[in-house]
Image (cartoon, rainbow, N blue to C red):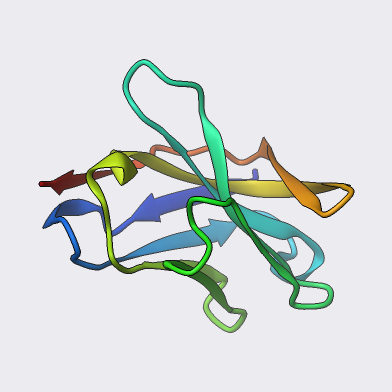
Length: 126
């Protein structure tokens, strides 16, 4: 069974940092792209970042570029999301899932495929 479990959320002040972890199991980690997604209250879920393990390419949403960094520890089957300079608008439940990246011109559309587990709450206070 494909499982991805996010952890590491919390309450942080604006400008602060958090590192989220995504522990994966039930599939060959290196064969898939894994990504982070978030859903704020009253909003649709959106892609934040994906990492393609086959070539190490990383993708970010416009809101994440320059502030968030995705990385992977293949030995631990874990993907991380380092979030710096957090803003109140980053407040959401963050999920990880296997990811599909659709390139449309210079824009990357990040789509979650499967493996959705319970998310982790990130709250940024102003």
